[in-house]
Length: 233
Image (cartoon, rainbow, N blue to C red):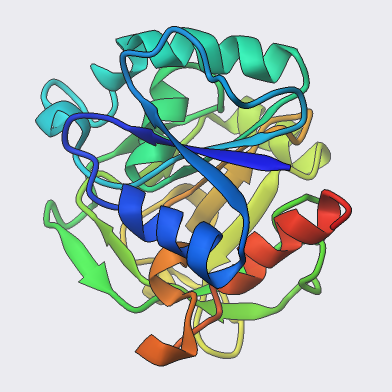
């Protein structure tokens, strides 16, 4: 399996993700420039990551301009051919803007940029991202965003629950989900979702920032390890 990490103008977590995949896990990983019209050398079944940052300065709305980059058309074709995509923070915003994931990421309820450690509860182990993690497991994964409040209409939300598309919810250390454990006002405390086919994934927390005990926390590494395990390595 190969990985591609997309670089947009304003990406700032691309090298962090590359480091985790290449140096920590020993994976075959390549950078993909946003002006590319293809995702080569990736093929069917390979993974693309849209990293965090401030693509195009977050002008208009976070991810609104990046969705028009040539690489996004190539990513859509990649998904149609059976490929996989993970968007982290700004990458999640881009995937929603591009229509590859349901819902939208809007301004935090407090109107401020939030940067802090954050507990999230795993809602399903039935995905490539979470197959090594039991339902209800609590992970400590940092967040850093101003437009991270997940919104989706009620009918779509019902469908997402029915299709097991809710990946993570903001919680406390014990896994309790309440309004007080919701840092940004996301509907139902949602911190990560996937599409109905379980090929496209988005999450606001940054697993690449909690992937090594060297920095005191490797909870996020479980997500990357799950993908590798799921791919059959």
